[in-house]
Image 1 (cartoon, one colour):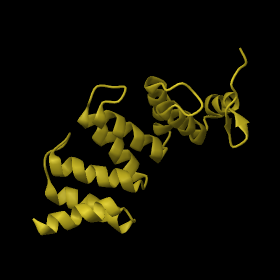
Image 2 (cartoon, one colour):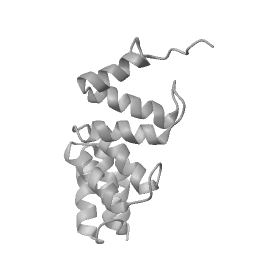
Image 3 (cartoon, one colour):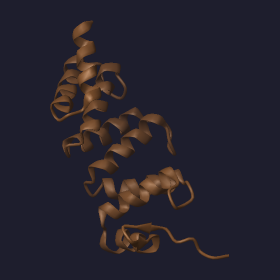
Image 4 (cartoon, helix red, strand yellow):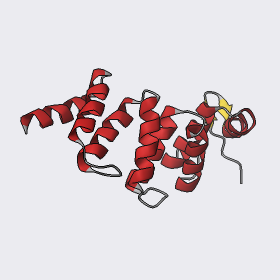
Length: 146
């Protein structure tokens, strides 16, 4: 059976793995996590996705932190853990990830992993909306309607 070769910006997946492992390339780590999460060019494997996202996240990759928050909040490959989700969303938000800011607003509004605080929720939604997140702007508008 021939080996299926998948390319990432002209490089074989093996090379992408080498970049991630040997050079601690967080873009490569995130790309591998993304591919395993969605099954692009590799077999879908949420556990491997989680591991690659974690490796990128602890090195400060905002997208990886966001994906980890999403996985913990939805229970994808892990048990649902809202406290862990809030931690990862917070790290992503601190790195400027606007969707993570929006998610933190939701977590505060609903009390998932944190005490309910509409003041905190609005603060995160305002930051996200100012950065261009339409969903956060819609969440703010709903607050004003209530």
